[in-house]
Image (cartoon, rainbow, N blue to C red; front, side, top):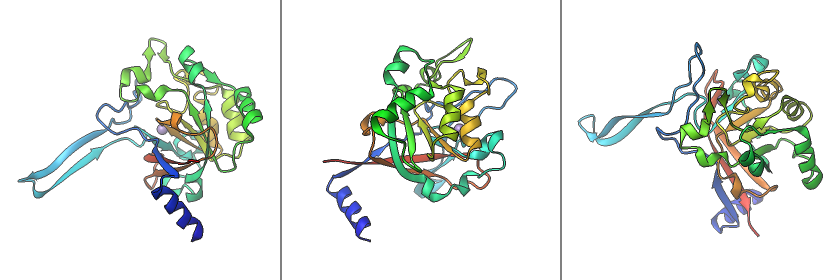
Length: 258
Ligand code: MN
């Protein structure tokens, strides 16, 4: 009781700031296009069904159309074949959804090379400076990619070879999944894996290893530049879709000042 009271007081007096890490949902929010013959996830569409008119004299309402995997969203273990016997998104243990976050910054690397992929050594160097990743925490990978998050073409950055967006080597994905005690990894890009991750072995290694090890992924994060390297707490709020392989999620960070 005392601790929650202190938290509420700190939020109201500004000592704890709440930062929204969620990409706004609009018809410009990028959504994934899979190659033939695979069906692509639905983009976000807002469909007005009443607007203080004959359809609703004193109310306004919309239906929303969206994939589990559009916009800022959580990937649950059953999204990938390696996690097929794991949890759906409604079964995510709640303590996994609120936890400490650390920020690992690859902005310079991604600006120099959109195909930049992080290796275990990148993270081990970070740990040498800042300490181990927190138990049950989230590793948020900052690449600056969210500046493109309302421009699908730039966000996907594709040419005839495929999409060019930053990610992780297979060895790195395996290390994060098997050698750390984190809840999951958050990224700024549309998917957890590098744009060219399908060509790696195994294909889409972050999906393969993280989701296969009961860890979670969050994509399309933004405002990571406003977080401290360590010390923030994030709150991840996916919808409890029964059988869901993921869900759009509001992701908030609590950051303490002074
Ligand atoms: Mn997804």
